Length: 293
Ligand code: BJW
Ligand code: ZN
Image (tube, rainbow, N blue to C red; front, side):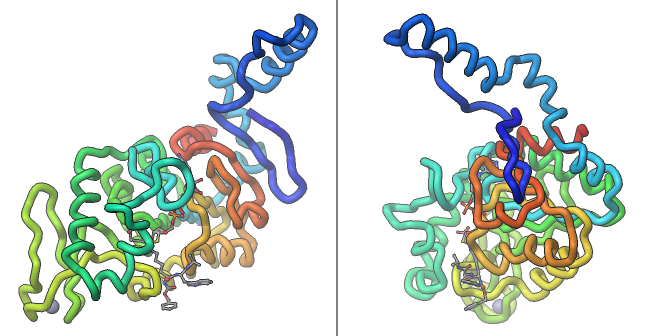
């Protein structure tokens, strides 16, 4: 439901939340005015059905006519599938008391590779029972709507691919691959099958093929994403806190090149200020509305 407009960005709130019902201790006049207020603030079922109206005419028009579209996703896009996000919220990733930036660090790979594997094996075991959500499916569908569609993700969970997205640019790698610390050969990890410990080619240890803090992104991944950002007309930033670079620079590149930037997130982020439109809500609820418009 539309809560209001801000100068730099259209701010729209979609889906649940909102004021609680009136307290019993309120007098009748207060109760009546609160009821009116909550009627004004809380969407009725009919209004929820009409939520496609909440996508601005500007965005609807741009979505309909854009030829080159780029989407950058982060952990929030998988939150509705049950994957914990990294920052904020109650279900933040912690392993045996260690914050994720300690266990998911290059230093830990050097110091205690078995512990790092244990953490990633655990995450894969959780992922095996999780499914893509409507946000993943909607983005998979978008690939066929535009002549150039680039899906760039910071996620390592493989859920975009499970939903049918092809050619996903995985900036931070994948938990479903292992990589040789010697020759960088990459090995797919098959669900329910034992993963390899050593490289077939050179015998060196394998490590999770994910990008940890201070490590370089996979060769070429950022460059391809940045090139698409520089030429896209419409850029969506979905479910990322936009704190981690260089991923967070992708919408900045798109903005500098003249693209229309739309953020989808229940919370504001450092990128919100440069967005042309901020849709405040969950990816799985908001993205299908954009696609329907
Ligand atoms: C919903 C929702 C719903 C909830 N719907 N939304 C420039 C300035 C300062 C520092 C740097 C800089 N450039 C590079 C750096 C250093 C560093 C960095 O960025 N640090 C900052 C944190 C300060 N970057 C790097 O080290 C990168 N490498 C690099 O730059 O190499 C060159 C270099 C080498 C050596 C020296 C210097 C430079 C690599 C970054 C790798 C990040 N790796 C991780 C871990 C992966 C492994 C693992 O999975 O364990 O990747 S960190 C973690 O953060 C993970 C994520 O991909 C990444 C981004 O997180 P994301 O996706 O944004 O998730 P959250 O949890 O932060 O946010 C979730 C969002 O969803 C929230 O906003 C919610 O509101 C929202 N949400 N529910 C929609 N239903
Ligand atoms: Zn090797």
